[in-house]
Image (cartoon, rainbow, N blue to C red; front, side, top):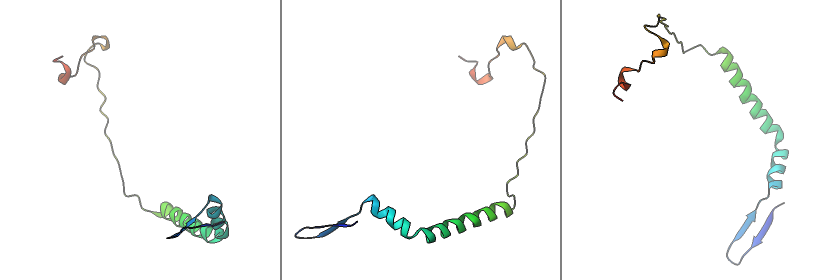
Length: 80
């Protein structure tokens, strides 16, 4: 578990991964209840929240003015 290293001036504790896993195991119920309640609140809010974003678009389709094989350049690239 906890290893205590004693020096002449200070005391330092080192924790291993096993210590943290045991801590999670001992507190599993509160961790689970808090996580589950947060998830439940988030789901209820996501389902009941009003839509605040609306998007519209207009698409203009026109017949091409020449042959596709000519390869006309855009006006800003014609100087090259």
